[in-house]
Image (cartoon, rainbow, N blue to C red):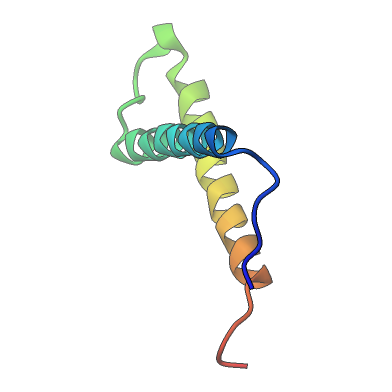
Length: 76
């Protein structure tokens, strides 16, 4: 038995595309923070960018942990 989503296909495609863009931007921000690309530029508030990047990394890790905990596990 299959269930269909109540949303039309174009809306699902747009939602999936926006989600992919958001995750890509967050991934790039995490990469830039890990590489130290924001370090040492006071004129662009680099410390704020680094702090925001670390918060994004922590939130992404927390979200991944919550999703993994809610998923049914085969080893139990």
